[in-house]
Length: 160
Image 1 (cartoon, one colour):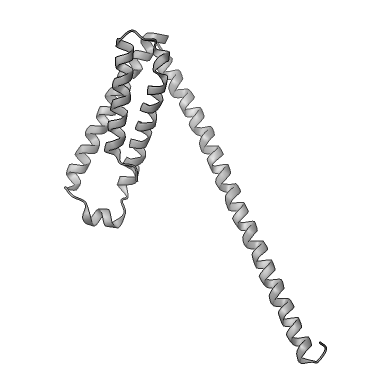
Image 2 (cartoon, one colour):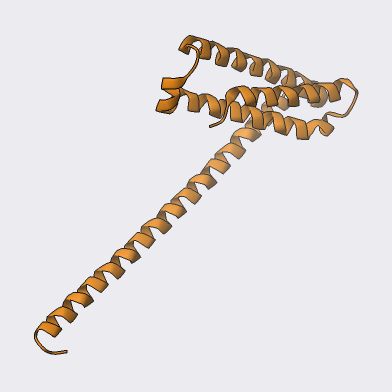
């Protein structure tokens, strides 16, 4: 399971590196690797948040701390990410002009939709393969049973 707290720590490290590079006068383009790490960490955080909404039974029973404490921690981490995102938006818009952040978000939506479509297509192909394999297996088992019955009947009548 993805730990949201670890993901936010990684996002914070990547964000601080981007900020340090930009403030040191480096071109924003040189920070793209760190921004990629930041986006990956934020994505991991959000996935971890989703997974924590429906935790496994053993986590429910053995979790330390209250539900309120966990909710407060996740809320604070989400707000921290939103602050980082706002600052990155400002840096991008200052470097490349107003509206760059909106263009980035639109590209992300398109890429995400395309990837989800590809993932769904791959899942459907796997399911079709499994279904085909099951059908072939059933046909083989059915044929073997039919052959066995014919063989036993022929043997019982003395034809073999």
